[in-house]
Length: 328
Ligand code: NDP
Ligand code: MG
Ligand code: MG
Image (cartoon, rainbow, N blue to C red):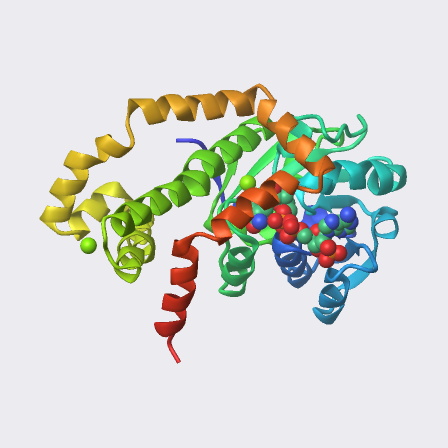
């Protein structure tokens, strides 16, 4: 088992007197900026003036500046804007204003691994990647804890890069939960693989296929919704809390026997071959290239696929059902 870093491995003192510019105030930016601010850090949020985040950051009580102003004089620049705009914002607004020896920090290894950002030699390039949506980063921090994070050092110009990454992890509460070290490429490629084949792609395809199978066989959509979507969280919670065996112990023997004896019909060697192909395309840079073509057409392909998903019956039925079963 790899070393897990906790509070005692990280020293917030290395951030003393350092100015931190958090670029972006969305999922991760808002959560991380607020946590670092509450941890006593000198934080300025870098944004565009006409965007909708500006007022939100101000009303949260943070200093806000346009990206070039925020970057000037910052010792650490945290790049927490969407992956698809990082390359352009970096080259136009960050790089020209980056102080000599400043550290660049990322929450995902994508831009560095696939060369969308090429930082100068004289700066530290580090990553703190919370393995969680931003909302949970903030919520667990407020509960006095944190979410697990991965850290990585891509460039260590100061000789101090890893302690910076550990300190930033501590500032957002992650060293309470535990921090693992990785490298940019491992984080970027495994994160893409996870979200494509299991977490976001795989799970939604599984749900939709199950729903359509039941409905096409004449089942009420409401019943199908509960069976294949609503209950999923309860099962996943069991797996997350205690592993797959804990889930098997917690469901009926009927469910366990049926699940174990039938699952290979759905996910099998063919599915693994397909997953390996997904991984190959990520590792070779093919996916990154395809995704970067999407940026040039304002994500038109993504929006088209998304609108097909939005039109599906499961989405419409789900909206109605969730409203009916809301706690009032
Ligand atoms: P978001 O999509 O939530 O970022 C939106 C923010 O970026 C807004 O504040 C927006 O400001 C700002 N922004 C967008 N375009 C620009 C621009 N051109 N100039 C200045 N600001 C801009 O990003 P996420 O938090 O989802 O992702 C940030 C990074 O964190 C990514 O690298 C991602 O992979 C990584 N990550 C994300 C996770 C998550 O929870 N979503 C989990 C772990 C890692 P405005 O209001 O002005 O549009
Ligand atoms: Mg991701
Ligand atoms: Mg059941």
